[in-house]
Image (cartoon, rainbow, N blue to C red):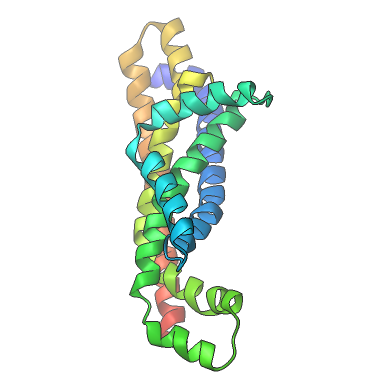
Length: 218
C-alpha cells in the first residue's frame, strides 16, 4: 500500500485539492442561498413560504446522485454548455442550500422576538436588523450543525465522479483500474477523506470557541 501511495501521491493530491475546492465553493454558495431561503421560509407572505418550502422539499427529499445527473443533463438542454466541474458545484450548492436553510431557520427561531421588536421600535430597518442583529447571533447558534453539513458535502462530493469530475474518488478509480489493486487504493482514499473531515471538524471547534469568547465579551 505504501508503494502505491508513493507512486501515485501527486495524482491523489490533485484529486484531494479538487474535492476541497468543489466542497468549499458549494458550501459558500449554499450559505448565501440558504440564508435567503431561511428568511423566505419565515416570511409573513404565504406564497413566498410555499415556494421556499417546495424548493427545500425537493432538494432534501431526493437522492443527491439523482440531483447531480439532473443538473448535468439539464444545463445543456437550457443552452448552457458548462464543464462537469461547474455542473457539480451547481448541484452541490443547490443541495446544501436546502439543508443549510433549515439549519439557519432553526437558529433564527431561537433568537428572542423581543430583540427584533425593540430594534423596530428604535426605527432600525429590516435589512439592518438582519445584518447586525439576527445573522451574527444565528451563526453562533448554528455553527456545530453547519460544520456537520460541511463534512457531509465533502463526503457527498465523491459522487461527482459519475459525471467525470476528476476529484479524489475519480482519481482513485483511475489508479485502481491501472494498478488492479482497488482495495488498497480505496483504503487510501478513505483515509484522505477522513483527514479532510478531521481538519474541517478541528477548524469548526476553533471557530466555535472564538465565537463563544466574542459572544461573552459582547
